[in-house]
Image (cartoon, rainbow, N blue to C red; front, top):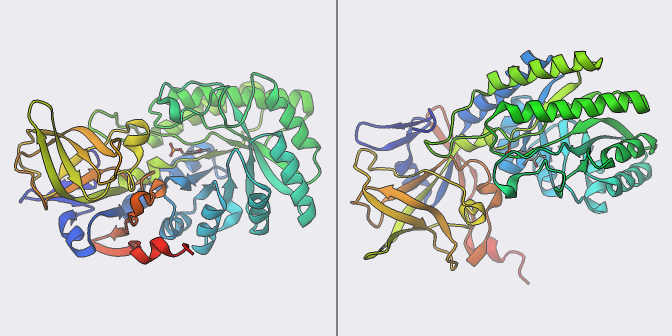
Length: 432
Ligand SMILES: *Cc1c(COP(=O)(O)O)cnc(C)c1O
């Protein structure tokens, strides 16, 4: 299977973290998200240990919490000693409610409103990752009103094309995120940040894209960022203390995705960064990485119950499930690949080719195309969509007034509800 926390019992049932997923669905209802706490912790430790070993004590991984944001995730990540990225007041509020240490929190977003900025400062956010000049003026002004000096990083675009999907490719010069090194805007905002009295510039940030498998991308962006840091040291006598290289390590959605040794990769990036720093005469900055999906993706899966099965002779077959783009919009958004299996028929031949579709009134409501399921598939069977821990729960909507799914957390043979299923009353709670 695509990840080692997925196994098959002798009677052909899918086990996740050692537990029979179909019986969990019967206990907690359908559809359902499952998360594997041990896997989340293991992924956190891989980053934490490799970064401390490779880059020294000052290095820290930050969990990009937009990948999956609910209180229990923040508690787990907090106990694993990682920092976090947040991108909205909602994520800050959730992290705070979970008792997360907000001094280790980095606030992203290309468009922070004055209300966002004030809320973050009032809650003692550690860092702003400032995107543009306008934001610098706004943060400086609001920090002055609150009588503090706010730590910031500057988000720069190193101009790298990661050869992944356009929609998640963010390091190019023409990106909506950050300020470009190539155009001179990066230097301009550095000068401004150094000048504004209520900002403390701690260093620089870049994030070149997602679902990256080659270490090359990180080498190249690190090199460009370090060259820029050396230039700022020479021209403006500014030595950056922190360098944040962003997130984006890839995960295996299907058997055809490569496996990546994250620890080995981090060591390779560290060798490159250290060599480059020595060549440029720069002290080694405190390195940050911001993994999102690679912390939670393979720690999650979604379970559905099969409903209507439609065969259109000479054309195509459809298997409908009781969820859809409301709990997983990623195929509809950018054709994201996923592996779909029949959770209690794992030992059967898969010779029924179909599209697995949702229940929403929208033709694009597709979970996955070209799926092979057993030909015995029928109404009431349980389907599992694997590796859905990232960007499923967090992108869920109430389209068609469908209640959002609960989350059940598995740990060492036990299961507990950590997010309740929305009720019909929840749906009308704010309607007047
Ligand atoms: C989305 C994002 C991440 C996380 O990306 P993954 O592909 O989930 O690892 C990290 N940093 C920033 C700035 C992001 O926008």
